[in-house]
Length: 411
Image (cartoon, rainbow, N blue to C red; front, top):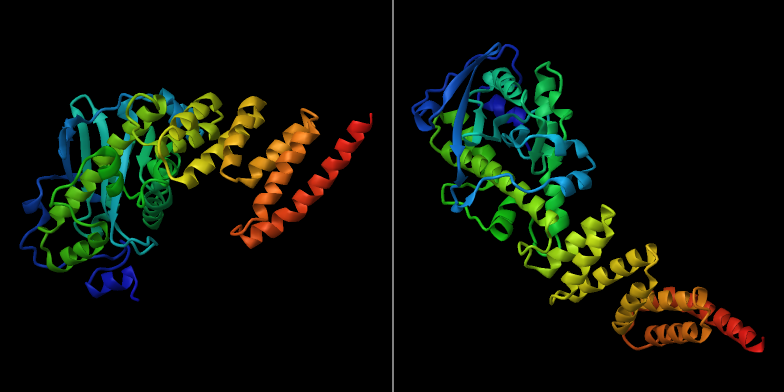
């Protein structure tokens, strides 16, 4: 399969910026005639930028673009408390469009979209690479805007956008200045929050299922973006790029909305914004990871009150029970293990046997739960592999318990 570099060369475009000459294509529909924008002059030449200000989400006028929720829990989750001390205007929401989805040094970042909150509204700047020869100017203009950035917000930016941008700076003999900002990658939080409920955690799926917004027919699928850009380089017809500008703009508006939404539900999990028990369970796991154990317990309790799939219910009970065990809330642990035992969970029987043996010295109850576990694994339909794993362990425990019980009776 030809590389991006090979494709560019086939179009008469030299890879890199050394000795690169302006394109000879005839532009019947140049970008300046298709999208309203202006040129920025940098020390490396000129680049094209499109700017717009939004006061609400154009996909749903009832949804204002704001930044009101506390970031305390997000700061705790990503382990970077310094973001709490930054003004909303210093958060920059970044998304790129590239000439290839796989990345690599032959991939151009032909559009860099950056949104930020201002006194006038949510300001979106889209730096467009009209010709690869303009890349140094584009990158310089972006750095000029990022001078005011204190926190980056992306969606998969840690794995894709930022490494790719850094590679373009290095390729142009500039230091990778985009590596030192505090960085909130919302993809990681979205996966933790909704992977058990949503089959896809793409930004488009999150928009429809979580933010309740839908794009218009102007949008184009992300996989088509590189082809549209190559067609533009070949033909000089910028008209199809209107859909790319729209796609990039909606991605960035969704980043701003999603950051506020996630911050809000983590700040007040039971304030009415969360309508699914599965989501509450996922939030319980996040709070548990952050050692906010009271908040985790409340999310688990509220989530289990919903009708949720048995696999998620079982997992939540198990996590909650061991969390309570770690903080020595044995009464709650016993209750949860008894609930799990009703669903024939072997680990719950073992934990009950252990707590009756070691904390209560009630060997008869410990024997009861061990024998009950053995009866379950010996029943028809129990998986052979699990039976082989558990049988020797449970029989060894039962023999030891019986010896301890006999000694206790002889005293």
